[in-house]
Amino acid sequence: MVARPWVGLPTDSTPLGHHRFAVAGEKYVHALAVAAGATPVLLPSLQPPLPAAHWLDRLDGLLLTGAVSNIEPHHYGGPPTWPGNRHDPARDANALSLLQAALERDMPVLAICRGFQEVNVVLGGTLHARVHAVPGLADHREDPAAPVEQQYAPAHAVQLTGGGWLAAWAGADRVKVNSVHGQGIDRLATGLRVEARADDGLVEAARSDAHTFVLGVQWHPEWRVTEHPFHHRIFQAFGDACRRYSCKADRS
Image (tube, rainbow, N blue to C red; front, side, top):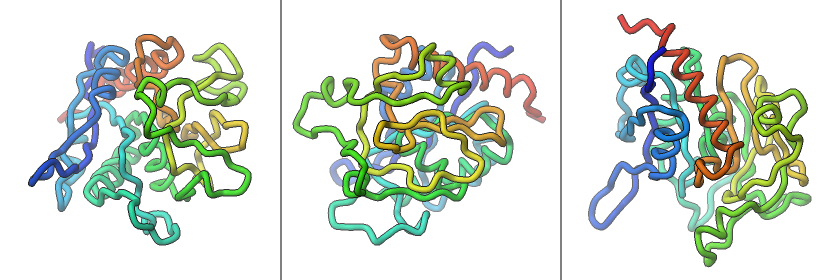
């Protein structure tokens, strides 16, 4: 079994000064390297996108990260956007097409925050554009004025589905998670099985019934991953799935 599988991370197209840069959060790269035992490969979000096969033929897994941007509503039939809602059309175009191709190959996918929403959209689900504005749902956003350690501290509990992957890895039926998101799952895509819910009913994690390893979580397990055994186990399981995929993949 390969020691370090190659895992791609679609990047965000971000303006810095007078130019745009392809960026990915270092916390995701670090978690892949130290907890999943993988070699991270940053995939630039080009416009138009390169054909997905150029990358996927050489990769063993795909990590869809969180981002400061939200998926454009036209991808899931959502309401019009509003001033100040940050979008990244290049990230949408690249991540969604890469994800679709990865699913067709049954390539392992771990999807975090925005990435979880991307999985739901690609599989036909919809999103709440503003979770806090939905009657009955809590405000899942962080305090932008708080220190980052407070923003990513455990914020609320989630109920883990009995017999699910997360419950087995946590060794518990409830855990506390951080909460740093404004959008969330509305209609869960057909074929996704709930792995966790918040107490307000919002789906916080799901996995695919039709694929070997496709898992999405709404919180951020990459944050200080080595300090949290449950989160470390999520990345470890993803890394193991990527190693198995590498062994059976046809590289010819």
